[in-house]
Length: 166
Image (tube, rainbow, N blue to C red):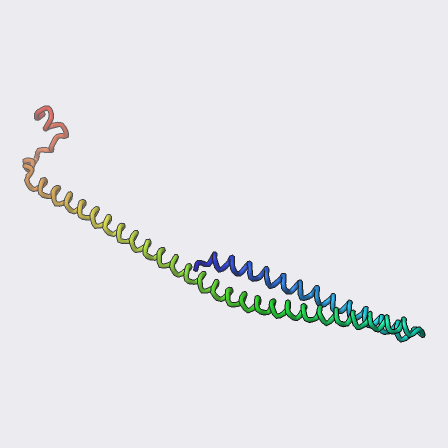
């Protein structure tokens, strides 16, 4: 898979972990408030002199304790889920790093290959230019060797070939 796909998965997994952590926190605070409510109900039961009020307050305290226990279990469940997401997130981070390195290596190979092609192209153009230059030099030397030489003492005129001799 490509790095962008891993990046997308990593972002989704990170969001899931954050949401799970938030839910776990919400359930922990709910558990805490229910336990506090249960403690208040127990204190109220201890203070009252009426047996029916005492039993009512104790039942209320038990109900709050059960709600706190349920909230604690939910918090634990969400915390476990968040830990799983964190583990998945770490694995995806590793895969993302590998994919990014692989893509960087591939880009470097492409760059080197392109550079080699450009170097070969430039070398071929240089060789072709040098070949044309040496061919022109050889042709120039053969023309110079076959051209009649000027007689001693006579300076060649620039227009001698065009209008006759002066």
